Length: 139
Image (tube, rainbow, N blue to C red; front, side, top):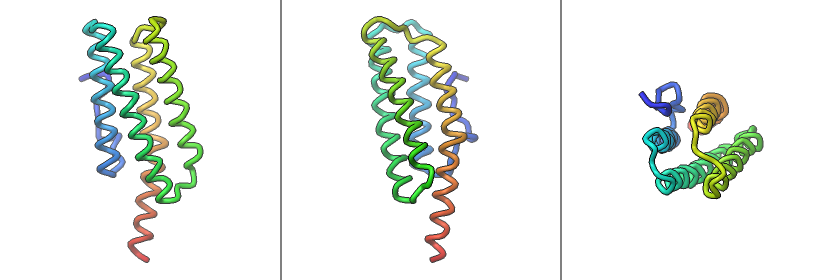
């Protein structure tokens, strides 16, 4: 079992978002395995870039869902997304400049952020969407 293993505790019962979260876990695990195997800087840099790019796409999908369903906590949720994006882009720049290695500390940071964000913030969004969709279907 890897550091980034999908578990049903992360399921939001929203197929698109769950699929995207599973893809993020798989990409992060691929980066983790490459780090453990001592892959070259180019391979690690490419995997880090892929993870960052996919995260941006995923965040835009989540944010569109929040807008569509009038999620009241959207501003705080988007701020979480922006903060992580800034932190990871900063890591990427340091890595590209040779001032950072991708370490277990970096991997644990990513894992812990994913775990907390999905199990707390994203669950609240999913609950709102489910209740909002239920209200729409009763209307």
